[in-house]
Image (tube, rainbow, N blue to C red; front, side, top):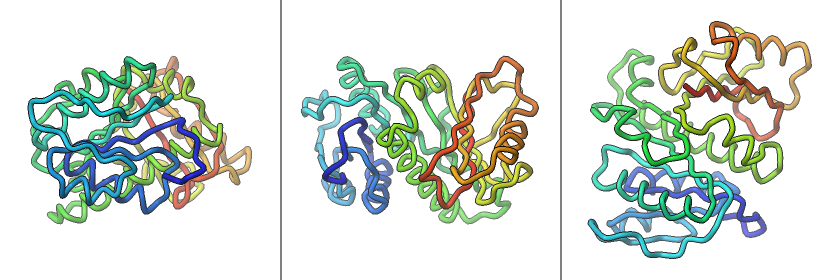
Length: 260
């Protein structure tokens, strides 16, 4: 964790994939406390997390991990006890008042359904490497996983940075994302037509009920409006979509977080 960063948020990696993602977050200097939880000491060491918690399968988490306004819990639900650890730590920090947001990394070949994973968290996002593999149209699973993990690391670095800077309040984040599952679309250019150039899971526009459209702070008023309307196209009129022009999105110019 950056030493001067306030403890508004924490990112907790559960299981081997969660620990690996923390290592990427350490490299990107995410402004949040990084906490690793696993039953394998090697995964914990790899994480380079601020706090590393070794647990035994079947035992409840007892470590004191602190109090935060927002906690992001990241894991691959198909990996061993990762989902169990994620739900265990969620019950702990939720009881202390934190809003807990899950980020599930779906790997190619996983058979777990969204409904099997979502319960117990305040809200959830899916970064789907299987979807990335399908959209790329090749069989390179390693490349698809690389894209998914790097996107998840960037997205978490951005969100915790926006919370830290005050561009995004925890209450606003909770209002938009709670009790739903989010997917992401992003692009490196400030053009309305390119919004869906890259998606991290399937986005079904008619089912979207809320979301954020994050746009680079340097984007002009007219273009920002065009981008927002392009994202909103095809969604129910009652959808609660919020546009925020912010810093810290690079290398992206637009990132849509759409909740169904």
